[in-house]
Image (cartoon, rainbow, N blue to C red):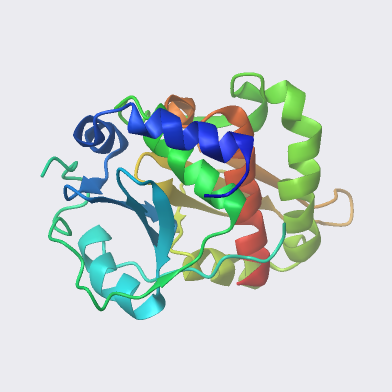
Length: 238
């Protein structure tokens, strides 16, 4: 077990919950031994009750991912029987031959926090800015530097590149103002949007990363900042 206070607290908090209730609230599968948690185009397995977070390797994730909408796994950018029917199937035990990969500590913590915090609220279908998240103003400047500014530098004058990156990560076109926009399912009930306004002779480029209003029912703002940073880095590397 990693010697990290936040991780160790999350492990203890998850063990206090009914795994079936936690899975139902989070919209994920629990098969009696493991949670299966989609994250963008990846699938994580959380073993229970020992609480170990692993990522399904590419081939295994492709086969299991068919039950999560057929998505294929997204590589992590370097840096730093009671499942919800949103994701039908996938409730049978994984084969013994299934291959796993280790997961970075910060992402393990975010995955555990998602399972712990989830309260079952439906997606609100209403977009808000990072600042509008609970306490978002505290992290707003850091979030801009971590997530927004790298996107502006990468795509401020590259509309085709932005579109390709969004599509490659499974983004769905948004009907919003701006030159291009996609939304993404970070977790089964956490939705993020990304809108590009291209630079021109009078105005610099700008990017807005938006969150479904229900996101704070599933993750604290600090964790949502990390998820937004992940999306930004993934788009830049796509």
